[in-house]
Length: 317
Length: 317
Image (cartoon, rainbow over all chains, first blue to last red; front, side, top):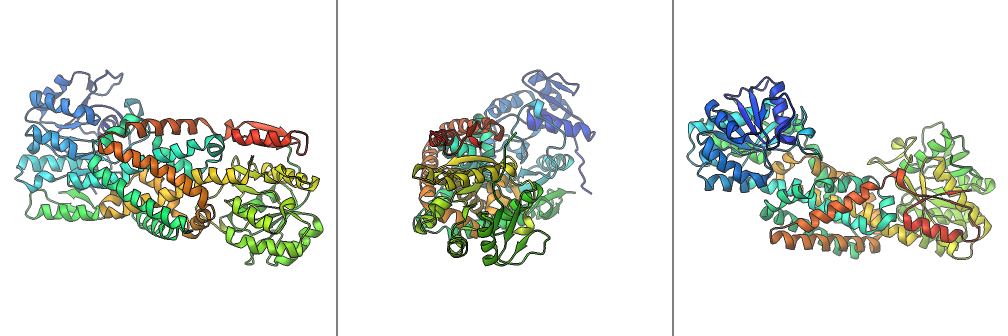
């Protein structure tokens, strides 16, 4: 059994797909949770459109605040948090972690912040797309950069609460340093978007005949090109260093394949690519190792590092 | 209603995923069909492992022969056909059309051959993976290069029979010249395989953390990297000229994106790629225009060319 006992209420700022789904799941689990959304929502959930009221309430409650807006709004949310809930601990759900951590550090809030990123979503967005069960078996990255420095017991408790939060909604909490997270998601999330957009363009350039013949490989290979361009920009442009590295690797592989194909063979790419795919397929959500930790205990940071290397999930005691 | 009256029996050479599924569908539709497979099959269908017997029977029956083996076996099948069924008309289901047509022309068989390519498949292969209904609503390309030259009434009848064959199993017959087919499938089928293999490799290079975080975009973007390397090689290497063109287009798009991303933006790729995707999505199997033709009639080749430009399906009267 997963122990998932949150030590405090949860205040969610931004009730789109991720924030809204989180509120629904917490409510379903009987955990105290409330939220703010910029535009008023017609719902019976405990939500308001006053950011100041929500932050003041979170400060009074000593709630765990979840920043659940897209990246472009994070900076102004942090400014409001500094004013209205300066002592609160908080996490976020943004798909890049280095850029958020930079904003947190600029404001001297490192000891109040544990970064998060649930690897869940649909092509839809907004409160109307939110649903229960969205995070079931999904990876939920939790960053631990601050644990390498001098962290307070209050931070350690916040770290435990973020793990509990992830577990409470059925996700697998996976520790990673912000930079390692960003490098990993550049490979497995942001690069797929660039390749899908490029494939959509090359198919489209083939005109009606090519699009009429498109079947499963084109449908799957282009699917995430259906994502709203602004969301793709927010992901990719806020993780440009790591994404440039991943893109360069892909370009080098494709240029090598071009050279061998001009000589008549794609054997190397076909064999190596298939072997890589089979290694990926051999891993499933059920196959992630599990580490059990007591945050703050002697040696716990080494355990986090080991879990990160293995892509393991963690439980906290 | 689709008129789908085959004028003759069907003899299928090679009973893998495509040939086997075709035999099952024809049998279910009550159309006379039999087959040959290199290795004996334990089945109640009318099949044998003697190629010579099957070809002689097809010659006696004046059957439509379907070459349903992978590309590497086509050359030797054509040689056997020349010996044992020299007067028979035939089609094929190979995923490249120019390379097959070259082999057909080398043997002087152009007036007996109508190329075909059903855009259907699964990650599985072989008789055990064959199933009824595989071709429902799938595109089935039918080549018409020979109609631009002097073609006989016998060839025109064979062309009609291949259209009937496709319609009989629920597919949409779409006319294309061999070279145009090859260019289109390079874009929408072969390029997706190269991109999937490259993505699988870049993800794998991120180690256990990256693979542990991989979610929907990576799963969909790599799916066809699960295809057996030999099949990927047969597709890509036999269509290398067209595929090099499509790959160069993709590389140019990705290199442009790299340059703008280094300057902080992927706006152009995200906006244009999404627009291209939406154009693709706006087309569905149900939205293909339908042309009705009488093969051999005055002006029918112009109708084929117009249908090809539109990616339209054709029915024959």
